[in-house]
Amino acid sequence: MRTWLAGVGLAVAIASLGLSSTRADAACGREGVYVYETSWCPYCNRLRQMLVRNHVNYTSYDVDKDRRAFSFMKEHYKTTAIPVIVIDGSYVVGFNESRIRQLLCIR
Image (cartoon, rainbow, N blue to C red; front, side, top):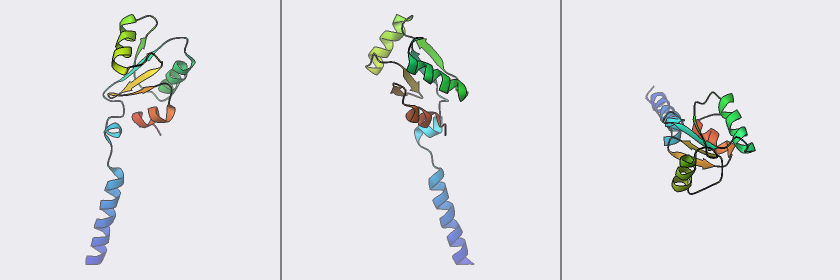
């Protein structure tokens, strides 16, 4: 019986290691999702479609129409490339679907 309980304890410990989450997994977009984009950018369109399809709420900034947003993006994320998606303080430049899915905990 004692051996069986020790085995169960080990199994529980191993299982809990697999369930521990990283900072990104723990937040999964709950701290905010922000997109810097334009209406004409094909990668921005793909990003918007992915977010809508997965029911992700986000705040959008059109950097063609909002010069302050463009300046902010350029200063804080050191890029003029679009789209820039900010998820819980982490950001991705361009449409890197696998990284975006990882940060949003979308399988």
